[in-house]
Amino acid sequence: SGGQSEEFICARAIEAHPQVKYWVRNIERQEKFSFWLPTSSDYFYPDFVAELTDGRVLAVEYKGEPYKTNDDSREKRQVGEQWERASKGRCLFLFAVKDDLGQTVQQQIAAKIRQG
Image 1 (cartoon, helix red, strand yellow):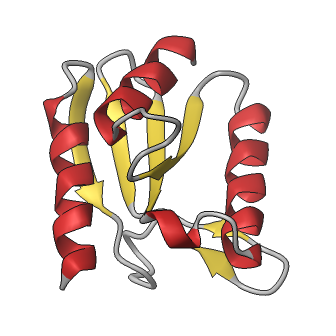
Image 2 (tube, rainbow, N blue to C red):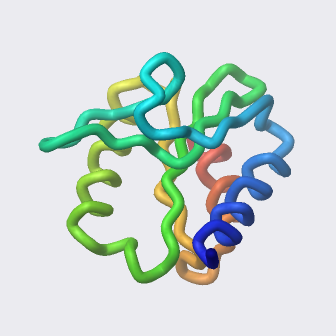
């Protein structure tokens, strides 16, 4: 499907960043291994989780353009940003979209890692 190839682009962008030590495609509801954040009604499993060379953790939720503003996406973004704030700099959350104000996914990831 088209969605998969777009996610593949996101995975490649994560893998290509020099500060990413390793990353995983986060699989939903694998209780021992999945990384999740609570939402008001359920759990949210960001698409990718990476460990950076400096020990920080980066969680990335990737969306193609049409979905980035729906309520579900809005709540996920809020939950992720709250998790990042609560971590006192140890964790980063990026809600990546295919093209955000002219920024590619790779640029969005690089900016997040830099600013964090």
